[in-house]
Amino acid sequence: MVKLKHILFGLLMIMTGLPLLQRAVPVFTVKPLKGSFDVPAKPSASWESVFNGTFQDAYNNYFEHTIGFRPLLVRVNNQIAYSVFDTAQAAGVVIGKHGYLFEINYIKAYRGWDFAGDETIRELARKSAYVDERLKAAGKTLLFVLAPGKASFFPEYIPSKYYEQAEGENTNYRAIKSEFEKLNLPLLDFNSWFIAMKDTVTFPLYPQCGIHWSAYGVGLALDSIINRLEQVRNIDMVDFWWDGFDLPDTLRNPDYDIAEGMNLLFKIPHYPMAYPKFRFSPEEGKVKPNAIVVADSYHWNLYGTGLSSRIFGDDNFWYYNQQVHNPGWPGPKRVQDLDLGSELGEADVIIIMATEANLFRYTFGFIDNVYDLFAGGGNLQSSEALREKEAAIAEIMKSMDSSPDYRKFIQEKAVSRGIPYEEMLKLDAEWLWNEKQKKEN
Image (cartoon, rainbow, N blue to C red):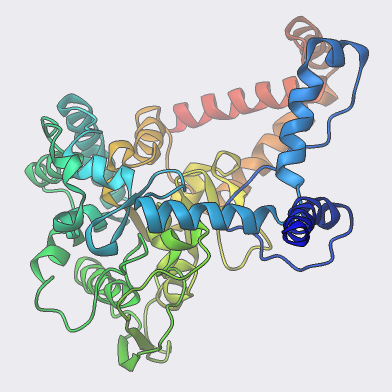
């Protein structure tokens, strides 16, 4: 009996000491957690922080996040929560019936709990109609796309408790579709289309453990987008089809993305997925329009796989209208750093897409920005026109700077505004250029 106590005590000491040893000298390789995590920096002690307790709190937080085997311990905890209590520890994840996984924002959108309001959506439709008219006049094609949503597609697997609360007065999806159709705006509704063919398609349109549409669903959507653009622009784009399917035993990215974020010890059982073998015709004799796609993460399934670059020339992905990706760039750029008129001037096609969980903020401010550009007297410009403008402004700056009277006047304005001389010089030159354009037009 004494020996057993010693053994149990020894095991307890080992279990207690191993995380500390692993933290000091990482002996074992531990699989990192999935997702975005901020590991707090080691705090520095001061007399004030020690005596008011903030150092102790900060150090406890730092120690907790850097303890040895933390990823493993988190996975154990998450697995117990999932297997025993049918609960997900990952923020926003909902365990549905029969093991179907959802994100809460999709359920909120499906139930109308995030409704933006009739007036907001009517105003969006009105501005969209104005922007569509102006872009058409400039030879551009604007296309609004309502991507499918998992909650709308699988409402039968949403936990019953989410049906106990009353629905909202409307959903953003229904309101946007209604208002846009009233104004005959160019709209592709993949949400209703996916639901309509849910029971007849050969392969799944949605994965059980992921939030994005399947590769098969992406292929169907891409084919529809190509057909619409060919019809509207009267062009012959690169031909697209699939030559059979891969049917692997494991899921490919991103078909397990919700489950990955749950950080469990064991894989969640799921049904298999089909992956089309996409094929494209030679580009010779075909049209590859330049595109701006303003969208949420649903477009990553097209852009990140290279599909969009096969059908578009200059392929620009404006992620949430914040960050711009282009396969020809070394890295992303910020939308605010680009000249909107120039970017639109270079594009042939502008697509704005969002899934149901993001329709409360559709079009991510893009339509507002373009509307303000046009309403403020701005125009679309090609790169050549923009270069000509910059060259003309540079000449005005040179002329102003060479005049002693002008230079003194600009210096005084710069001092009064508290800005550098060169900045004030350019502002005045731009004002003179704009006034000249108004007189000429």
